[in-house]
Image 1 (tube, rainbow, N blue to C red):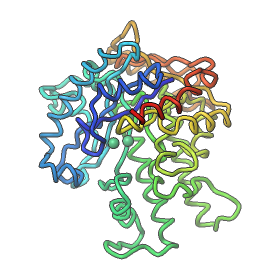
Image 2: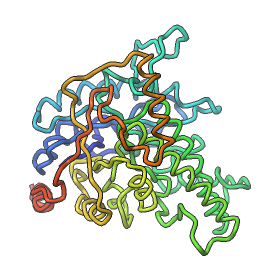
Image 3: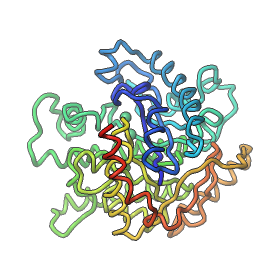
Length: 390
Ligand SMILES: [Zn+2]
Ligand SMILES: [Zn+2]
């Protein structure tokens, strides 16, 4: 089996003590057939540092150095477990810079790397699917902020973001229950607009934790039901249209939507994405893949049996990214032509039908035949238990 999304403590302050090599050794021992690396891209503004980074004396320049070191260590680690065919990628951020500047320039600059000419007006345009090509093999498209504030880091910081989304400014006070839900829906709207901007900017091959904006309240409804007030119906109708818009955009360029055990590990009744989103993906012809979003060896393959059961319940197929044996580059003219074809698919009933399976950064999507019957599944938990005893 496979996972497309992982981190390690050597390069991420909120992960356990581990290196890319130890993560891959663990994945190999558990019987994974493919295991990919996707360290967080550096955040570029001091205002976006997390508390443990500040405590460790890290600033934006150190985060950039650490990311460059990750890219090298990831390549070296991949060579130690060649049977895993590890792709070395990165998980994005998309944060409006302090003062409201758009997050795209920051993201493109870190992916293109030090010495890149991006940002200078004389630089040749690089179309979305090629940003970071030559440095990363693929991107996991994650959004972790709304209004410039973290939403999945911990409950207190989520509460700050929630209050910032409320109709009436309440910088300190706890939100009354009736305002809470409306504020959460407003936060979800902001998140989904950031997610679409991210997808337009860099066309990530994998879409991370689609509905992480409801991490702390998975019961937040995302679609109208019979018991809503007319105002709730209006809000939910708008929100559901945004979810559908984003799913259809991603499906139209061939993205893989991760089904992630991380939500179950954090107490959800289902993996990411919840059933309302999963149904939208399936009806759009979108492709699914598996992720554990592991931040330590103990989290490799965590909650994967719940992921399998959830997907079987929905009769879903899965895909895996592997290295493309014949990587290609597009001219800007060719990229513009493919963008017209993508837009036509997006306007069609099933945008995922006929979407490309080969990506310019060097990965290719493959359907995994007979995935649910693989011997991996019955050996996973005994192997996890045995590794834990060591
Ligand atoms: Zn993380
Ligand atoms: Zn993430």
